[in-house]
Amino acid sequence: MIVYTLTNKVTNDVWVGTCSSSGEERFAQLCEAMIIGLSGQIFKDLRDFGIKSFTVEEYAFTEDREELKELFSEAMEFHNGKSLMGVKTSIPKAAEPKPVKRKTTSTTTKATTAKSNVRQISSAPVKEKIATGRASAAKEKIIKEKIALEKAKMEAVKSKQVIEQADEMAALLARLDARSASMKRR
Image 1: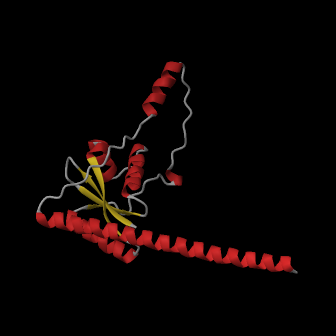
Image 2: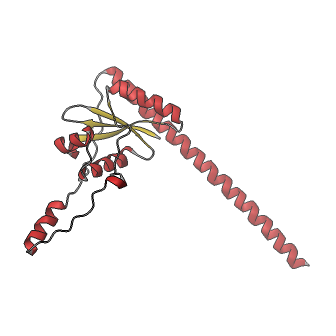
Image 3: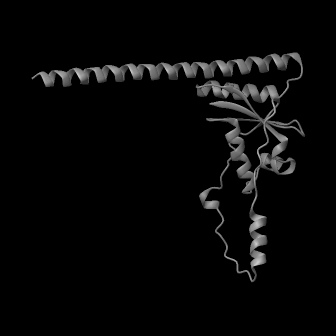
C-alpha cells in the first residue's frame, strides 16, 4: 500500500491519498472521474488548472494498514495537505444518468456533437520534486530510501519463494521419476 501526493504546481497545494498499486494509476482514475463530471474540490482543481499542472509522487510504502494510517497522517502534516481519502472516482449506479435519444437532422450536427464529446487525457512526464530547505530534503531522501528498501525486501521474499517452489518441483519430479523407474523394473 502506498501513500502518494499530488502537487498543484500553480498553487503549491498538496493532495495526499493512499492506493494499493501506484500513485500514477490513481491519478489517472482521478483524471477520468474529472472528465465524466464528478464534483469535488480535486476535480475542480484538475479542471481549472489542467492535468499538466499536477505532479504525482510516492511518499511512503507499507504492507501494514495501521502504519498506512500513520504515514498518511504524517504526509498530511508534513505537506499541510488536503485529503483524498473518500474521493470517489465513479458515478454510483443509481445516480448514473440514462442516455437520452436525440434526433438530428444533419450529419454535420452529429459529427460536431461527437467531436465535442471526445476528451483526451495527456499524461505529461512527472518531474522529480526538488525539496527546499535541509530538513525537507533530508526527510525526502530518508523516505525514498525506505521505499527502496521495502521494495528490495519484497523482491527478496518473492525470489526466495520462487527458489523454494523450484526446489519443491524438482523434488516432486525426482520422486515421480523414481516411481516410474521402479514400475518399469517390475
